[in-house]
Length: 85
Image 1 (cartoon, rainbow, N blue to C red):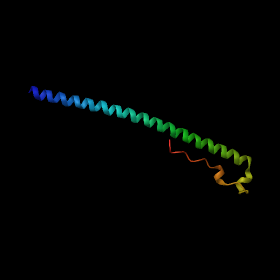
Image 2: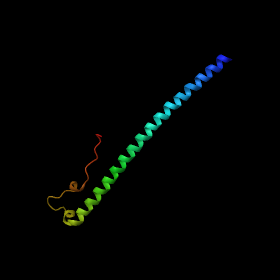
Image 3: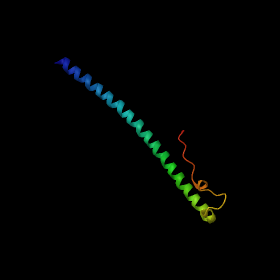
């Protein structure tokens, strides 16, 4: 009986260690998600800011909407976000 109790305690200790390890992994993942969320938020703000700037450019130069020479739609598109970070 003592051996069985000892085995159960060893098993419980192993489970507690596993729980501790998993809790550490969860904290790391939560930090990673927060960082990715912040990056996405800044990316969205950049796109919105670029769209506002482009709308202001179009308002200042309405001829560009009619396809005036030297003006391309790509001039008003924001640069794609970099993925190399």
